Amino acid sequence: MRSMILIIVALLLIPLVVLHAADPAPLDYTVKLETVMKHDDGKFLWFHPRAASIPGTERGKPGIVMTIQKHLKVSDYYSGLHVMTRASVDALWVGPVLPPELDWQKQPDGVTISVADVTPGYHALTGKLIAIGCRVRYSPEGKQLDDIKRAHQTVYAVFDPKTAHWTPWQMLDLPPDEQFDFARNACSQWLVKPDGILLVPLYIGRNSREPSSTTVAECRFDGTKLTYVRHGTVLRLNIPRGLGEPSLVAFRGRYFLTLRNDVRGYVSVSDDGLLFAEQKPWLFDDGAELGSYNTQQHWLAHSDGLFLIYTRRGANNNHIMRNRAPLFMAQVDPDTLRVLRRTEKIVVPERGAELGNFGACAISETESWVTVSEGMFMKDSRARGAEGATFVARILWSKPNSLMKQN
Image (cartoon, rainbow, N blue to C red; front, side, top):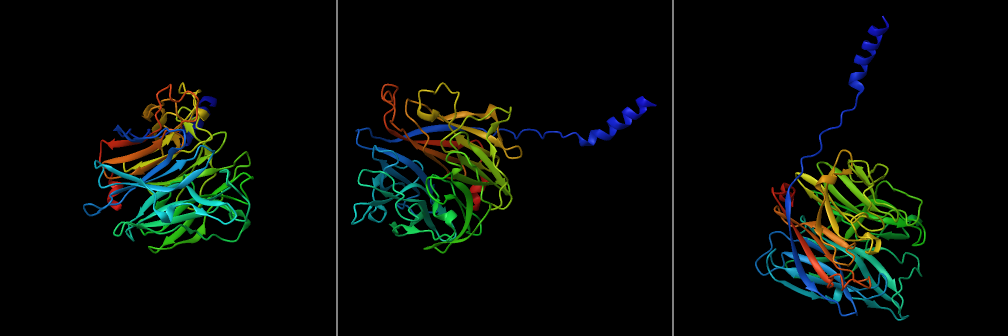
């Protein structure tokens, strides 16, 4: 009788066993690494290159725009925003040039207002390109200031491909709540929904000294003005620096957010792009920590796979500041939110320079890009082979990316 009861109990428990779905089939790609330019004169470095494609441009008009800035050899001290253009993926680069509308604004009291950490993107409904970043106030010595209320805010400029004209920087007006007194979209991937609505991730707080939190703002764009509509869940982490530099991507009807923290990177997911689940630490599929910390991560989405680009510990790279090189790319399981270790590849190699400040974007159905410049901040960078290079790692997909047909 007892054995019969045990058999019945065992049968009843069978449906309760959770079977893990098979891992996503790996999507293959090759990497073509291009050097855009080299600069290492000890006075400045080119930094923060991020690109966006403009579909359907006429011959002679820029098909790809890449924004880039001078790092002026003081921590987080940047020039006005420079621009490079390319008529097609294989055409010659033009620039960098500094549009006067995107240059520094000198103030009578000696303060300089600039814009840093910019990410450009195309808005198909209006045919305009939007560059979004954060306003920065610098002292004459290049120190970032938090000397007035709302010194750190999100700003944007608009590029019209038909006229090749940029607008001056404009502020994204946010609610008066004190949690938006510090509000940056910086080094952050934002996205445009098919209806033209923007989802712009922000890291926010009362000031720059307290741990920041992250939320996603829904915004409208009429071709000229970007307008805040509402924001979603505020994700919080009460440890040093909190959650910052969030990057957002859409994949198969859901939205995925990757978040920077000093100790480890985090990931969250949402069904609508506004209401996000509590963040989880980034892990490999074997349960080990990813090892990415105190730097940004970014996404590439393909119709057949979701990918994370990141730096991490454990790659024979302890000689690199914060282990910020090489740049890895690996496929993510969208159900478990884990990185598939067997898919990890190096897309930009380590040559003795840090690569932690980078961009990632889709260019066409056949390729996506990872863009980065070498940070020559270690004493032995040159001896190890770094040249202050700006790289484009062209990710050449083995299958067309049907997500790009929507653009």
